[in-house]
Every structure is written in C-alpha cells, then in structure tokens.
Amino acid sequence: MISTSIDDIKERLSLAYLTSLAARVGCSVTEVNGPDKASVDALVRPVLGSRNQIDVQLKATSTSSVANGEIFYDLKMINYSHLRAPSTNPHYLMILQLPADETAWIKVTLPELLMRGTLYFGNLQGLPAVPNTSKKRVFIPCSQVMSEHTMQQLIVAAPTIIGSARI
Picture 1 (cartoon, rainbow, N blue to C red):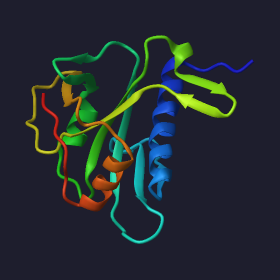
Picture 2 (picture 1 turned 120 degrees about the vertical axis):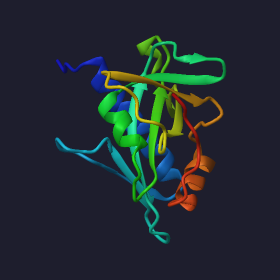
Picture 3 (picture 1 turned 180 degrees about the vertical axis):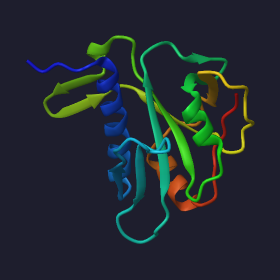
C-alpha cells in the first residue's frame, strides 16, 4: 500500500497543473529541490526561443478560500518575505484551489484524464514588511487564473512583473 499525506498530494497536483499548462505553450518546468529554495518550487522557461524565466512558489488548498472576488491564503512568513523581496526573475505565488472532496481532484475515464481545480497567480514583490508573525494572509484577485494564455503572457512579459496581490 502507498501512503502519503494529503499535503504531499496537493503539492504534487499543483506541480502537475503548472507542468501541464507549461507543456501546452512550449515551456519546461524544473522542480527545485533542496533545503534552501528561497521559496522557489519551480522554474518555468521556454524550451526554445526566449530565455525568459519565471520562478514559482506553489501552494494548494482544498478549503473554501474565496471571498469578495479574491482567493486568500495564509502564507508562512518566510515565504512572504521571499516573495515580496526584489528578484532577478519574476517570482510568483501560485495557489491551486482544489475541490473540498478529495475524490473529485482526479478522474480517469476513457479517453481522458480530468483534473479539477483552479490555479491562481499573484505577485507579492514590493508589498510591505509586516511584524514578525508565523503567517501572513495574502489575497489574489480571482481574475488572475493561470491558463495557457496567461502562461504565455508571464513568460513574454518577464522580466517585467504582472499580476497583483495584497495583504
């Protein structure tokens, strides 16, 4: 029997979602491993052509996290600090909102594999420092959905940073 935590599954699904979108637009995703990742889980760049790159911090949740047209997430302070700091490459927070029912996350039928969820992206660069706490709630507009078109925009616009977030 295979045993893993729900959080590990969510993490892998967020990477799979990002990788699927990137593949569709001709980009590769390199997963960053190791103890000092500076809140970078993945690097996204075109396979051919442009050398632009974006850095991504991935998070996933299956709790109700949408209110007033925004998705919110309680981000660890170390991640908040890294994501708000200046960076050579655009550094985005991406949050995968999964259904509450974990049996609905993935469905396999002939002829398709269906993954349910929505990946949102936000730019925290330049947000203010906050008093030392363990977590900081961040908000991303629900209009900032990762799609094939959005992925292309983020890569083409790099190193210009687009998208917003707030605290």
